[in-house]
Image (cartoon, rainbow, N blue to C red; front, side, top):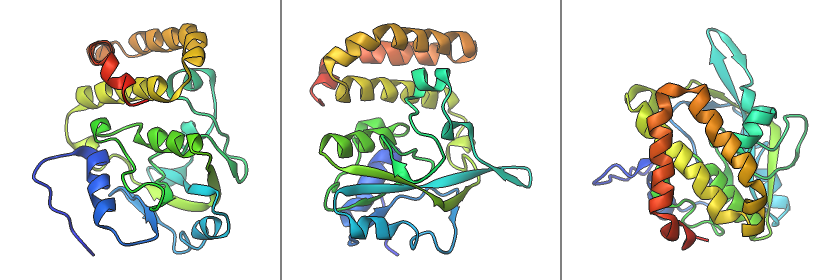
Length: 231
């Protein structure tokens, strides 16, 4: 076990980047501190990377806990509002190629392809989409492996930080950054009505978070050209 001591809080994205930098493995599995894997987790995921070099990353299923029961969270299925606001685009039905993996169920990826997997500026949230889109745009496949299972005990770190407003801000900011960085301009133009509906729905559905959402919008406007440089 190697422990990397950092002089500042770089968030999830920056912390993982530093860990990957000093790692020596062929594959990287990013685990949060509130996840427990089944004993055969690696046996059910690594073979897909081993047998097909076109596969850049694979992802498992994360079950959440409610009391003593384990259940699949809602983001493993599609509904219109989720599609507009979170870019969820796969069903939990079978092993298949997907457009993104959800960070709560950590990706396992080839270190040779992603020596610096995330953008430090993301800090936390939607860095999973960032990595997924990078893989796709470079011509690689992403596989979702339903039989590889994890148990998620839920927001052990962020849940205890009492900074909900901050994480609501960076979450929405990062989601919008992904759209601006990875989508074609023609696609963005076509999606403007849907994006606006999604953003307005955030104000309506959660008025207490309106200030955080507004800050995310102002940040995108102020740093628009900086974000464009990431394309």
